[in-house]
Amino acid sequence: MNIDAFPLKDNEDQSKISWKIVIAIQILVIITITVTVVFTFMGAFPFDTNLGIYRILPGNILFDFVWLYVFSLIIGTMVYFVTPSISVFLWKFHRILTNKNYNYYVQEFNAKQMSESQAKRMILPAFVTLGISYSISNIRSIANAIFVSESFSPLAPEAQTIVISMALLFILLLLSCFIVLLFAPMWLMQDKGLVCELKTKPRMTADIEGVGNWYLKMMKGFAGISTIVAYIFTILQTIEWYQFVLIFPPEGGFTLLIFLIPVAAVIVSPLLALGPISIAFVMYERSIRKNIQSLETRIRQKDLSVVEIDLRKMT
Image: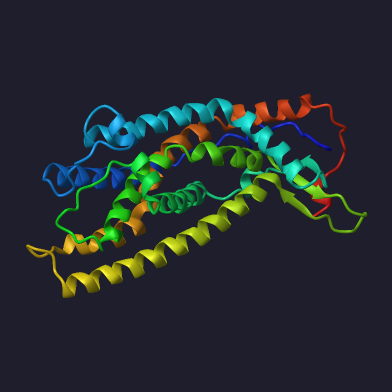
């Protein structure tokens, strides 16, 4: 494993957080939480069982949402301190997965300026969380272990789309608190400029790829496929439910809200996931300078040969 580590420049590693984005996200999430709490206390979504992680936490549904931000702050603190260690682990894991067929370098040019915007960075983990949450919400035994079952007794058993969508929403909010712990090491390798080159015969043009980008590409693939599947199946299940209630309307009728729940929960869920994600992401941005220096120190501490190379001349 070859590493060419260049010193940091003070003007390259200090990130500026866009508080407007963070505040806008929190306003959207708080509005959604408020609506959910209001409808719950009105009896629209009563908690009729004592299942799941949400019911283990002290307090009612109002405190359940407060716990989400507590978890986000805890994960944000972990991101601040442990991201370099996880980055090194993923770097070594990349070496194992690729059968040691790559040489590794640190770019001399400013890698931070080449990375995507903060908003784009937070969107990807939000959609990954959607994919994971949708998979879990369709497995009743696992979903019940996380989510307190909701009472939709006035609805027919065929209304599985609504039940799954509500479970998805709560599971997604919970998982979104932790997802940054997975993405932060990838971002750190990206910001540090850790890249790899395939070990091949010398050629005029080098095939160079960021180690962090290697992982992020897999995350993008999963997010894209799982999101399409979630949207398609939700639409199909909702259409099936609509056809059923039009032919066999539930006793007492049904409201427009019941129609909108399945579709709205899935469509807006990535935006709601940004609430907890943005809290932990702020901690990541605050720790960039410290963690990049820590990652470089860990790189230099390895018993590795140093290859003098300027990647700008290779591209």
